[in-house]
Image (cartoon, rainbow, N blue to C red):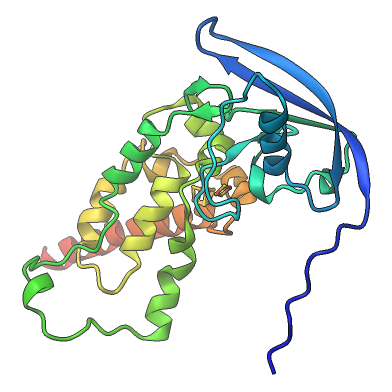
Length: 259
Ligand code: SF4
Ligand code: FES
């Protein structure tokens, strides 16, 4: 007989100071509001924010949906660190004060909500889909495109991205150069480059071989530290740099052979 799942236990409650730095687009300034909240060992930052909105007249604008680390929409800065509100347990922050504010690396719209237009433009620029030499295969191919476990494992960890934008927020280059593709887009570029079903590898590398793409990365590694899905964008970018360097060397040696 299947074992019954144990309900999570609420062991204790504690009082914490909850500070919200909210952006007001009318005055283009931040307002700070603080309150004491009773939280349990199960309360997440998102639970606390929802509780505030249910009990106070002045609502905090915020974005969320799944409440379980899947949709990527509740990204914000929590106690100075970019994080998902639904995945951040209040008491595990081990601080009597929790401060939340919108991400700084994206334009701020209102309250805790940021604008993702640029983020998705960078993402789209990577052509995040499988490209085949013969696109009509999609309709005419009679069998699956087979892939070994090893071929799948080449790209699988990079396909876990939930597009939360935390890595971009943490990236020092993205914060000063809005033309830089950023860790999320570049990790997705690697995800498709490394997929054995994709046939646009060289074209992808040519596109990525610029200062606003892979060579813009200064390898601070902060993107990978904040990623809630262990995508490791910093590693993906280094793999792209290696692939570009190898492509250049191959081209150089093939030219020499022709002489
Ligand atoms: S790579 Fe990680 S941090 Fe960046 S958008 Fe994807 S899931 Fe979020
Ligand atoms: S609400 Fe979906 S990731 Fe947090």
